[in-house]
Amino acid sequence: MTQDKVLTCKDCGAEFIFSASEQDFYAEKGFTNEPQRCKPCRQARKNGGAAPREMFTATCAACGGEARVPFQPRDDRPVYCSDCFSRQR
Image (cartoon, rainbow, N blue to C red):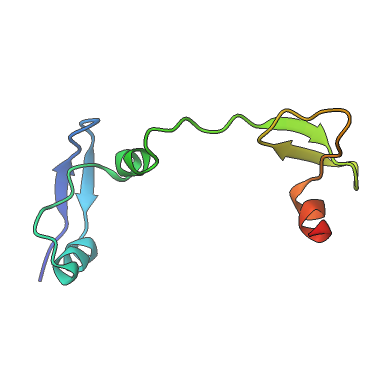
């Protein structure tokens, strides 16, 4: 039976746990190497180092609530919150 291991991330140097269940999963998939990065560093690498999107705040044209959108709102186009947008589709 496997036991949890403490590993060190090669990117940030933080220690992280390689749990017994993760080890079993790796073995089941046929992976022979242990992970070298902690979960946040793996996620950042998976995203390609892309910066988080800049979000803008606007007033929803349907309900008047706050809407957060990934584009600069213009006065000539309506902006909808996510709930109202999904109802319009």
